[in-house]
Length: 622
Image: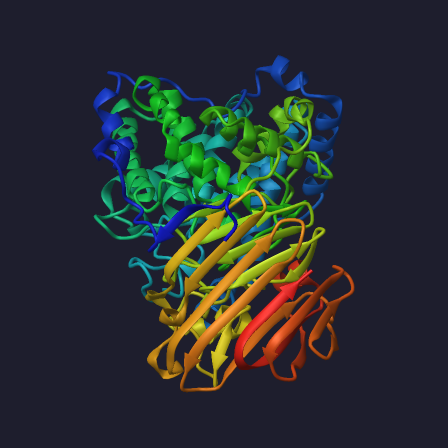
């Protein structure tokens, strides 16, 4: 260990809940300061505010109208009962979801086009879309059609017992924001339109939200995930974008505060998102959206929460996860590729007082081909990107300096120099969207992948079922980890790293952990110690010392075909050279990628190298 190194964090994984009662439940504490009457909330300028819509840059106006014209020319997708039932019958999520999401994208684009142009050309199509959504039997996805967390999915929606899942809440928000923006033209066309919309929102969202407990609302110590912030934000958006009585609005705020505390409690003070960078946008970023609404309607109660240090840490997590451009350190179900940032990330940085996130979001947004998000179903998000496009573009002033970070709450360490970007995952195998990956190393060189984390295939019924870990991408043998005569890591919070130490210095970073505890007894391990030493401006060394009853084999995953020489692995694209000590002759497998989701991340194939472990192993990567 060099003399300039200091211990960043040592010991077991940090417990998420720390601090005093106000820190642990800040949203409930804020309820004591609610005003006598909640203020109004506007998700954006109404249709009648022609000055606001005409003030959009011409390029933005043109793009929104062009998108609306394309959507107006398309027939509306038809949702059939057989498409819905395909999930229970065949495990197929994709068929129904493609049609379902296309409807919502189409409606969002049409609403924006009508608001921009203001001539009524898109109004009939908007009305068609809104009525189609109102006439759907259920707004919840087939994969979420259950009344119990993890319970059996019903083949069809029960129209008398609506389920509020992620996308029922998204649908309510879409209709409410559309109703807010176009209330004047819709009422002029027929007052029955918005009466129908409001009835459906009341029946499917407001009443069940206040009268039924859904698991994602939180209950005691039960762990939450991105659902809590995501659903809560969109319920708030649904209720406060349309007229509702003061009593209803107040009850919704009180329930939302309790739910957001249930979400908040599962985060450590370091702000790490255990679900990864992809889900950060549905987790911490939706917490921002929820707080944005709450601090608008009750500023005296909720605005002080913007200054909480943990919220700032949660905000900055995304920027620390970026490797380069669209590529991010990924683990679990998170993908390696993310869309560029937009207005929400930038505004989040402003709200919590983080110039680091502000600068990152603005510079990252500049790599987008367009401000538009054609795949986004949330009208509020699309609206905010359009309204903030000019200011966000002007704010782009280059990327902020990157930093080494250790996140003890999830056991994740990232370190960088001018050439390498390194991530080492400790923690345990019981996180939301977990893969069995304790101890796995991800490495990039000059913006190209060296050691990769695959991510996940297209979701099916099996993905979130008791058979989840039969899926190959979830297994430790498909991470940069050892196996022992077929024995791999086990899932669950009981299986994790211990004796985890991280040391940072100006010229070196060291990550050291014991990972034998991530394996079941059948692996026959007495110990397995993994140490990663990163010499800045030099090499990354992975050293594994182990002892056990079974023969060991180390898997290494690559995005390019490795060239093998005795004791050496060459990766021509990244330019990396891996010197190998303590291993037998490797076996190289070419793995064809047939899944569309994995293909978008890695292309048509990846390669796995299997190295027999002959004793202590060392990989020196330059």
